[in-house]
Image (cartoon, rainbow, N blue to C red; front, top):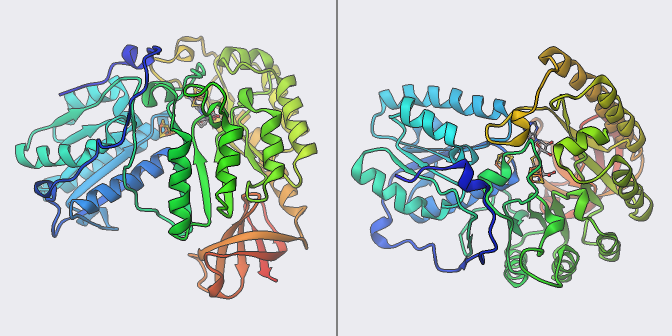
Length: 471
Ligand code: SAH
Ligand code: SF4
Ligand code: F3S
């Protein structure tokens, strides 16, 4: 048994990161999944979605097949998220359901992985109250899934293997893409920013950039495989390379990826701290780098930003924001905001509303602050009532909706570039896709356009989506 430790998870040393190319192997005796099925539930961010794609590939290499119904699967995995309390609650609720299932079908194997597995409090709870859970592994050892599953199915006793370490880079893990035309591409792992409210630096380890040649090779292979759009993934993509190179950063990587000729490139998430003018230049220089930037601001109050450890001010955020709006044609900028951070006053919150009015974001993801055990903010005095926090969130969301609609309405009767991804779940005569500014659009047009980038005339604009017709 190997369990996590928050103090260990916090450590950052100058030790060299190991880049391991041959760590993942499946031997014939590990292929225990013949005639068996698996089901994975995924919570949290794009990193987790992409990790799930990797686990799917490993399980299929072991012989398992995917099963859409959890109730019928032989192996059930929950790939969890620790970012807020409600993410936790959802998982524990689901485990309650699965426990009943296991009573009826004692031979199924149930596992928990992802960011919650990296939390000491969660592992303590599992050891005390969830003894029936078969397997727990963390974010650093996903590649060990086949080995661990083999052990569990042989031994039939709880297996917990979670490492609290700065982390290695495991190259050459297979993955099965959820979407034929789009792919996530990890460019870095972990985070060293340690924003005071955030659990990610503890659950994902130290910032580790992949080598640029490994990333470019992956993109070239995706092109060969028919992929049209990639999203470069990292908690803090603008800091790419800082841990690995003297003179090679996100600007260089973006340029090298753009030169591969892949049709569309997105990147998330950008921390305002590391966003350079050169980045703006590259976005403008290459047509395949989309004019879409997710730039979380978190708060509009300098006092709160300081307490959050974000290391920028409202002023410097606004300067960067205006530069993007002025210099990148048709750019769409979205953000994340936390309300009810410990000690946030009405005045602080009004600063956030004011900033929102100024920026008129194309969209925002808004959250009520949730204390995470082990983070500095969890120890700060929090005297804002839950009702007050909810009320602030509602007031903020009113603005989010207003400006999201306004942003969409600007596109009415305009022609936009859309990657058609598939058929709408609600109406089989309608296609769906995303514009180059990352807006969801329902499209009337021929199914032959699926997987293609086409021009679409926008004929209706709603808060969350657009409607259009292929030209
Ligand atoms: N790396 C990204 C964010 C990753 S987490 C960045 O720095 O922008 C996604 C969002 O969850 C964050 O932007 C933040 O708005 C929110 N979040 C993180 N920790 C939170 C917490 N403890 N309570 C509420 N929201 C939180
Ligand atoms: Fe969390 Fe801050 Fe890192 Fe984003 S940059 S993952 S909010 S610590
Ligand atoms: Fe959640 Fe972990 Fe992502 S905490 S948001 S799944 S990095």
